[in-house]
Image 1: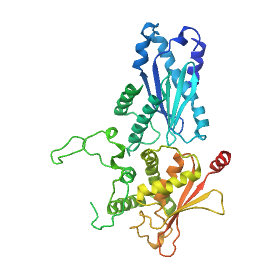
Image 2: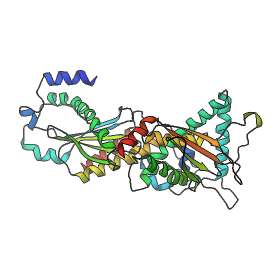
Image 3: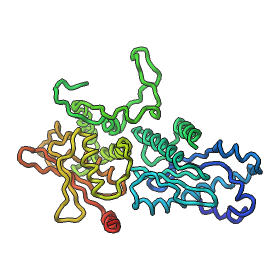
Image 4: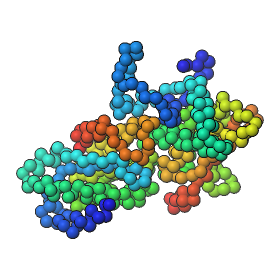
Length: 172
Length: 223
């Protein structure tokens, strides 16, 4: 499914080339990926800090923003290869920025149960992202402890969603 | 339901909660009979809240005996029964892994086999049964086999095995926990439990961990 999306977007508006490359939408894309490379949870945040600073720049029309959203998924999943390479070289959980794509960075956090937390973002401080990841890991463990939650299945709880967004607002 | 005996064996509250396959839902609205009904969201409870909590061995023995009876009705054969117990232990192990690593505060993942086994031998056993496992050994015959032994396994303490199913080992539950932890950290292996009685410890159980070949290959590359 991702493959067909990527071919259509590369044929159309050039990513990174032309004016669209500079007007980075200040959204962060966060995804939790399970052990079978299946996304368990996805969220997009508009980071308030960068939005304020780019008030003078040209706004991206809504239609173009929609096109880029599925690209986020594609970028995050292609970064999984990098995670797997780094996995055995270190026993840290927080792998910092593992990949870069057109001015956007991908940071990863690998949990003890081999769940990957990936964040697509513009330049941000390592500490802020580390705190955010720690918060999300804690929320994930609490969800996991629920005996009705099947590990590796989609997290559809709205309370979880609210908490992740609150944490993003606080740290990102 | 606290035991009156002074020597209360400790068990993790978490293992009891996580191994329940089905539990009746309780009403979330506070009723007047129970004055202080806890209605907080699970996402708001602190993970360290039950860190040192103990569960009485009577409660766990009762729960485990019910689990055994439940599975006994639904299987045919000893192998099947051990496999079902293994699955129940698996559900506990997955949760135990993340929770115990988080609680350790030093948060490092394990990338080497020996580190992983040591983690199971000390931290996991201590959290589950209140004491470390009794021995961790590497088999001399096969490169890929390791053994963790427990002289007095809590799960089989109150289970009496009749003669016709004498091959059954309730340590299959513990084996399931270990297998889940190994799987979670990307060390896929086959884990089984065997009774190896020695002097003074007739119930001594050994958990045999047989690592898959890819784990050994990776260990070789990492050396």
